[in-house]
Length: 102
Image (cartoon, rainbow, N blue to C red; front, side, top):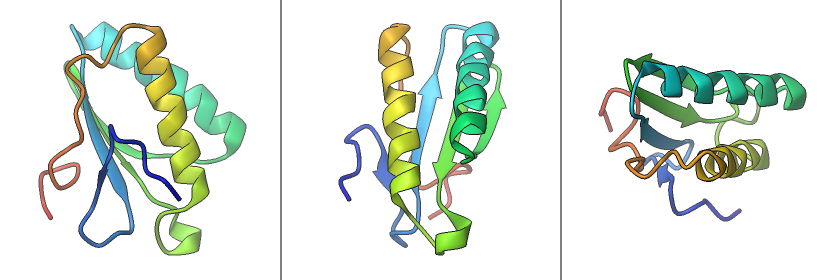
């Protein structure tokens, strides 16, 4: 399973993370809305948080006890949405997870 280069594998190997920064809250919320609709379609939901123009995402599959193809599919779709909307220029892998812990 190949992890997209825009995502960071947690040291445990059980999740991938990414922090996305947007111009403002509206853009961040629009990204979350679009990805929420995709999540409902594929029945796979991220762990994420939003503070103003920042969205932190952590992907893991609890049923599988860690990372799965479903997480990779979600990450690829998020990257596609960011690229299509010209968002994500300031998006980087989160350093160690949603709250920076390792």
